[in-house]
Structure formats: C-alpha cells, structure tokens
Amino acid sequence: MAKKKRPGPKDPKNHVVALNRRARHDYTILDTYEAGLVLTGTEVKSLREGQASLVDGFAAFDHSGELWLEQVHIPEYLNGTWTNHSTRRKRKLLLNRKELVKISRQIEDPGLTVVPLSLYFKDGRAKVEIGIARGKREFDKRHALREKQDAREAQRAMRIRNLRSV
Image (cartoon, rainbow, N blue to C red; front, side):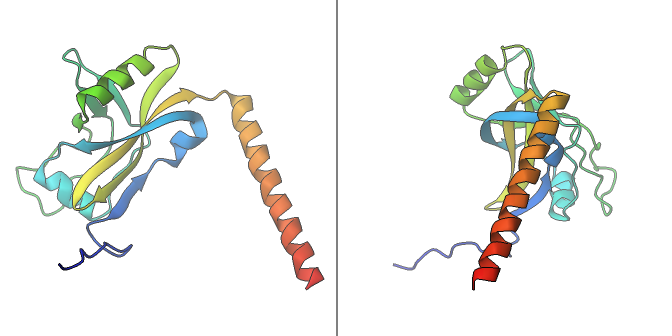
C-alpha cells in the first residue's frame, strides 16, 4: 500500500490567497467555520494568481436560508473574455445545514456579524474561513494593542537577560 503524499507548504493546491487582518483588529472573533465557495472559472484563475481582498467583505443570509459572501473583491482575470466575472458579486457559501442553523442562531444576538477571515485553497478547492464576530469599541482596540506591546517588551527583556547570562 503506497503512502499518500502529504502536501507541503510550496504545494500550489494548498496556499493562502488573502487574509483579513483588519477583521481581527476591528472585531472579537467568537467562533470560526470553514466554508466552500461557489465560483466561476475566471474567479478561480484570478485567485490562483493570488489576487483577492476581504477587507469590506461580510456574509449574510438570504430569504431562503442560504449564506452568501458579499463585497469580497476578486479582480477580473486578465486573460478572460466576455465570460469574465464581476468583481464584487455575491458568492454562495457551502456549509452543512447544521452549521447554517447554528450560525443563524448565533447572529440573532444584536452586535454579531459574520466576517471572512481568510481565503485559501485546500486540496485544490477554494475555501473561506468565516468568523462570528462582535465589533470592538475604540478603547478595546487600544487595550489590545497595549497588551500586545507589553508582551513584546517582556519577550525582548527576557531575551536580553538570557543572552547576558550565557
């Protein structure tokens, strides 16, 4: 029995296309899910070139109970023809019914929303990591930055102290 080759970090089937760093700064992420995307051919080709932006993106339910990703920018494929896609169209997210029900119950609370965190390829298929998020207030952002800065200074001080003791 031959062992299945595990994909490495340089494998073109597994790579991160876009990260939404702004989401982790502006929101407190409560829960995350991995969802598939319904894409056209030119969208996939554009993503394989490493072009996408999740900054303005969000997910919302429609009247039929399906979850749609909106305002995510995937630029037009340069070698595409008249079949090219529109850059900010709605894209359907593929999740299990149980996950959809769970997400819809979670976002019923006021102040919660669904934001895309990262867009990547997993075994050749486009996936998006979405998170249930609550918006941070300005003082929360400052507090988080201060904690990060304090931890960085503490690490620096310990590293300098360890270098002197050696």
